[in-house]
Length: 203
Ligand SMILES: Cc1cc2nc3c(=O)[nH]c(=O)nc-3n(C[C@H](O)[C@H](O)[C@H](O)COP(=O)(O)O)c2cc1C
Image 1: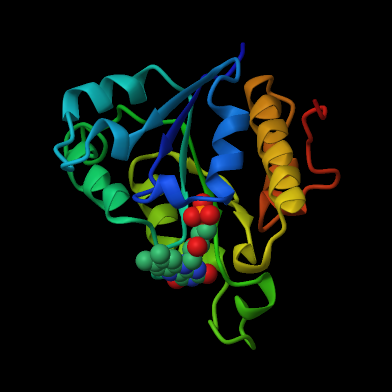
Image 2: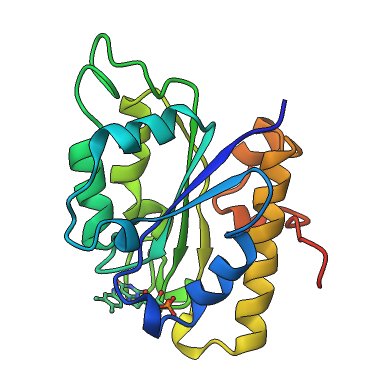
């Protein structure tokens, strides 16, 4: 069976975006993907909880797509988690609504990968900074996938962004068609390290 993918996109300044502009172009209309722009839908952060929960129920793979802000996510993602992941629904003794679904973070970060390491300026990897998301997924009985991280966006050329967007599109297609085994996924720290990284055909 094909997996249904929900992309929860959060960028508070999308009009100025370079990286996510390219990513969004590639996945917005992709078969099997529901693209949901949270800042567009809720500019006042007034999230419709029942609508969001219904969307979650209708999908198998949930993607948080956003720029890395202050070693975390833009405020919308936190607000969404605070309101949507209710006790007794998402977690707790009878909170099984999300059981067995997968959670994936797709992130762009200004800093290059070298500075996100034990010896680098930021001391931790982006994967490590994402622990609250990983543990939230676990609490909700979801499986947390290795993140897909586009590093070094400050110095990135347009062709590199387009290349990253093709990889992102390829990854979502591979997930939709069930082409990536859990065993294969468990071996990498980042989906960027899959060998080969699935790529959509260039148009
Ligand atoms: C408020 C704010 C906080 C940021 N925090 C970080 C950060 O903690 N680490 C980092 O590597 N980049 C950080 N950045 C850089 C963004 O991640 C980067 O500009 C973005 O990923 C580029 O994507 P875009 O072109 O789609 O906006 C920050 C940018 C802003 C505006």
